[in-house]
Image (tube, rainbow, N blue to C red; front, side, top):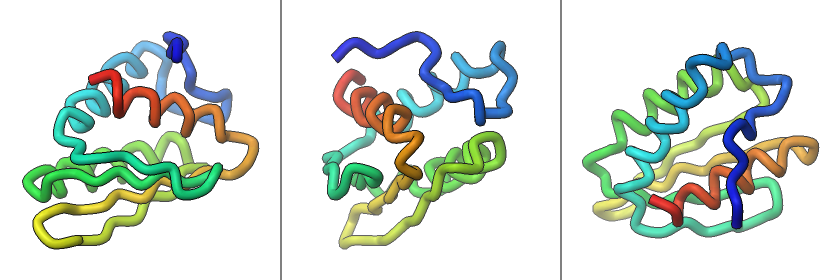
Length: 105
């Protein structure tokens, strides 16, 4: 799947110049993915090694500040942590792009 360079929707308030840095942060985090599962069209569960829970929570908090349509929930599962990423129907393409990045790192 081709990933567009700027897949952030108009609803994102992160300055355009900072977006590549944020994408790089997600890519760095996704290097620790154990697996990613699409549970529903509007939700992606990303399972990480627990050693990156704090940075994952921080990134989710900052992403929610500029893209308020995202929802992030966390759950510890054994030695791993699940980050549930949700979006409303009109932003499924953003979730698609994130999902594609989980396998491209």
